[in-house]
Image (cartoon, rainbow, N blue to C red):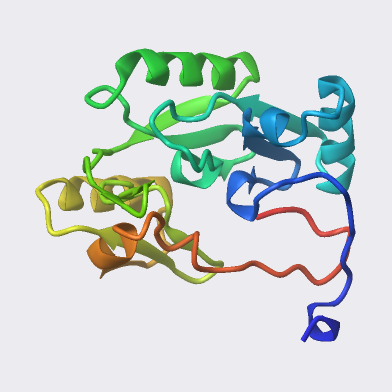
Length: 200
C-alpha cells in the first residue's frame, strides 16, 4: 500500500523513474526532461530536480537518438561517485557515444564501457532492448545481469565482474523480457528508508 512506501515527495515535474540514474551525491537524466516539462525554464527545472532528488549535482545527458523512451538506465550506471559504466556505442552509433562521453567527462566522471548491441526489432512501436546489458538489477548483495544467448554475454559478464569485484553476478536470460522494451532495472523498484537517503 502507499502507507507502506513511507515518505513521498510530490511534484508537478514529469519524470520517469527509469530516467534517473543516481549515486549518493549525483543524478543523471536524459534531455527528455526538457521536452516533457516544456513549461519550465531549463535552469529552474534542473535546480528543482536537484533539490527533489537530494543530490549535489544533476547531470543532463543526450538521449539515444533511436530510443523513443529516452531513459538513462539503459545507457549508463554509476560505479562509484567518480566513475560511470556506459554502453559501448562504437558499433551502434559512435558519434553519439563520443558526445555522451564528452558530457560525462566534462562533469569530471571517468568512463568505463560495457558491451552493447542493438537488436533492430520492435513490438507495438517500442524498440527491443535485447543487447542492453546496462539495465541490470543491482542490490547490496547481488547483481542480476541480463544475458541474451549471444557471444557478447561472456564479455559483458566479465566486465561487470571487474567493475563490481566481490559482488556475486547472476546471469538471467532476459531475451523475451527485453523484446517488450525494457530489462531488469525497468521491472524493479527501489525504496529508501528516509527522505535524507541518497539514490543508489
